[in-house]
Length: 70
Image 1 (cartoon, rainbow, N blue to C red):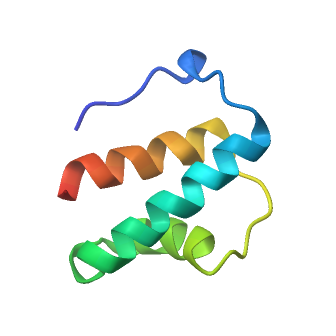
Image 2 (cartoon, rainbow, N blue to C red; image 1 turned 180 degrees about the vertical axis):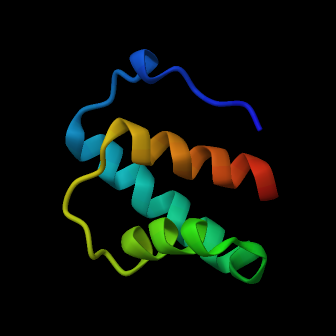
């Protein structure tokens, strides 16, 4: 799995949250059953809109999960 450089994110906090929610929706719809427990936890946090913020690290982790399975 390729990890993203955390210094490359230029999104605002609101843009990060929107993208995280979109990624979570995509991941849950496609591959929920294949995820490891720690991956399910982060995806579900954004899928059920439990979190009102998304760090750069969380966003890049969601992107990595999507790239890993889709």
